[in-house]
Length: 394
Image 1: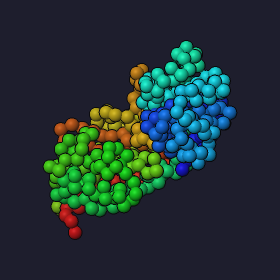
Image 2: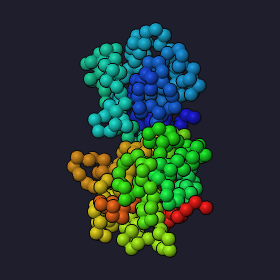
Image 3: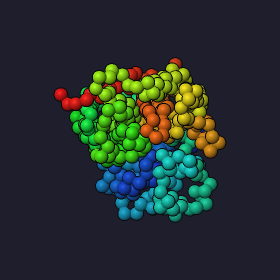
Image 4: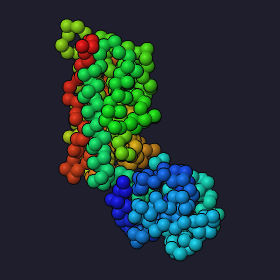
């Protein structure tokens, strides 16, 4: 499906920034920015010319031409056997004054033009000509990725709902005696049932599943790690649906026989985590800088006597789990993303955490939100209490 809203957004951005042409050069899906705009599997050497006047062109091989014709957004030109000559003819006819390219020193999600494709462009139009007219697409692609269209928000919302459905089912199936990989298999089954894939790694790979006693880190589940009494289990799970991602974490606790609640230390750490998440969700507003949002949750953690958060309190969510743009982390001169502002229609995963060493109680609760003019709208079904794990299979 073509998300025409993104093409309209792009054309508006080109006009706002006085850029007449945005060029994407790609072969065998080499450019990583293109999927943000169109769902194309690029095989032949192809040039996409997006123009500020709304008339867009694609120069491609005969085998790919019909695909772009069906999209209805391009004038399609077949390059035949001499792509370079066809490119030069089209380029000259467009009278390009400012040419935006997918080049960025700061954002890997924008740095989609390969060195080889850049050299090809230099050879076709000349190094000096290119030097005079080229600009980075960073000035508008970051906005295009961050500010979601109605279609994008709906796809993310579906991914989030499916993730919550899987959690709800798996929550009732986790039992004492299971290994981390046993639990992973429950999530794989859920992904297949819900028609989604893992947003990280292989399509049906396991989420991040950690028994805290065995080490809380970005590691793969271990079949030797077995759930026991008083264990804390943390799961961080992201799925991809129709090209868009969720990112939700949940925390569990194994109650010993005869106990009705977790021990005091664990409950306090969990409740502090929950309070930090709620403080951000309740306090975030468009116009706040990323570090200001992070401080809301970080202050809760630190003032409760726990180590400061070791990562960001949140990040943007979209076609990638970590979708670039404004970062919700501590202020630092080498991190310009934390000084950018939160805006309406951006989607964030919120995850201030209590993380301690030596097996001490550690918890992650992560929720997905979309920004509105009034503040955060929560997309996920919030975890508001510690989830307790059954002792045995029924």
